[in-house]
Picture 1: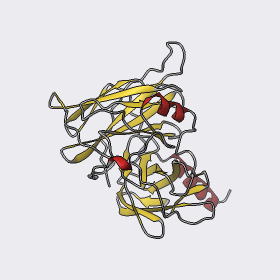
Picture 2: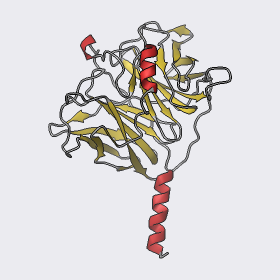
Picture 3: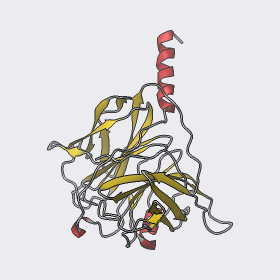
Length: 313
């Protein structure tokens, strides 16, 4: 093998092993009205209760494919440089190669865009802007090099179209510093808020997750609606980053926000809980271990802390 070929192979292998990313930034969304809320489960989202959980179990996890159902996530910015203030551009294309320009609004947005490191230690929930030609764009600042996965969660306006979550890889060049998945623990803290994760996440069965939020030793009972609810939860499976997007059951405004979710398999998961208080969205991160079903009849769940995430719009 000549020197040029060796260098090319090494660069490809290094890019494949990248795994560190940066947390989400801050922002405020308007209150979502009732007509913006979906009636039940759709694609990558899970509605509350057993019905939503069963539907989730009947579908493959989202985010594992770049193309599905006649639609493709076309990432126009597959590489950015660490430390640069830059922009990510992408489009959703139909099976004719045309950029999609019409979407159904769900949870107040036409499209939700999630960015996470491949090691699941960092996370961003972004809300990009769509141009008239169907090109989406969002500013990003990623100070750490590594491999990232981006997820586009959307429903085309075309008749009969279902909700989809498509995924694509993003590479951030620079010095790579690998990080281990944070160990599961019971609580985490972000911006002075203490978040304790109770309940169970089960493999193949509905489980209820019940994070509770407090500050200065007092329960937070006045959470503000964010994307039409008092909390917003994304779960990613360690290893392949299978995507679970769950919204809370009825209730609120705190201190407990209840979610019903079904894990597609046993394994380690990283959960990111967005909540809004005093006009600001914060993200609490947890590591959860889901056991094989059987034995005690349920998968065991633990919460886990990690680096605080920021939230960007």
